[in-house]
Length: 343
Image (tube, rainbow, N blue to C red; front, side):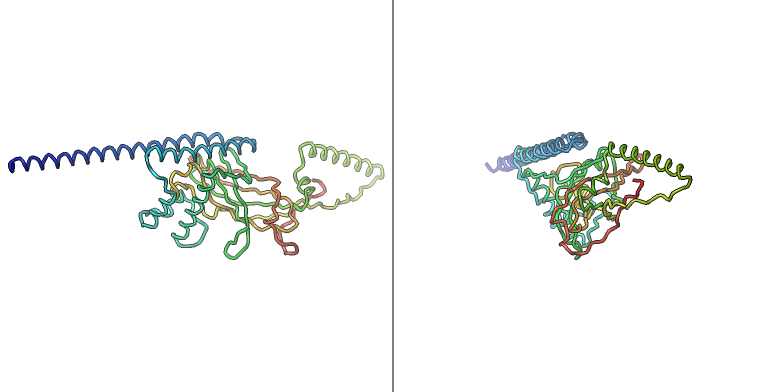
């Protein structure tokens, strides 16, 4: 009996080792398969967003975008359930607290650096909370677009504008997501922001004449010039041309527009965050109490292999919410844009 004991122990050890190897191989295979399926899901979303972000009709774009977001946030939990896993929205934050994340700012992506001041942990935490907020909203079906505009393959969706405090100064926070900025480009910057404020709808209309109105004004001016010329000829002398009263078209604000916390890789803060999303928020000024409409123009610059491409993203005739305004009587200053007699 004693003679067979070492043999039995050897068989048991070998069996245990074999079971461990089978378990390890199966676990490794499952992990690789899980990662592969995650990559497939991300690739499918990327291919879908590539054409959705180029839809020009606002109503159709919003419907397609909401449908795509809903589909993606249905597929992610299904994938985790298939592999018997539980999705942990705080997994990356826990890794960060444990000191397992050595890259820190590299998680933001590319050359973009946070405008927000503070130590690495404070900035990282705010970025994580921002990404988490979007994840939770989108997962509940709240991809609510307040404003949307784009140029070429880039789409900028402003999801919320609300009063906020920036270092003791009151302003507006415009949370946004930009799609497609880094599918073709490796760097992005906002070189300047221009906001034009209109106190009445008539002001806005005068600043945005239709092609027909432009043509009619041109013809009317030519006719008026001909009549004035004939009149001066008959009198045999030149008359001084009377200047028409200038019409105020709006008040303009110019400023910087770099995102406060630019996050090119949100999935480094919350696992499985939709690819192609660049999220952050802009700082906007509070508007005067009399403001009715505003136009916002972002001058963007994108750098790629072929060089730098500059273009403008416009948001026109935005109705100013009361929460975006100063209280009546509070002073507000800006440059006045005027219309000359020949406009």
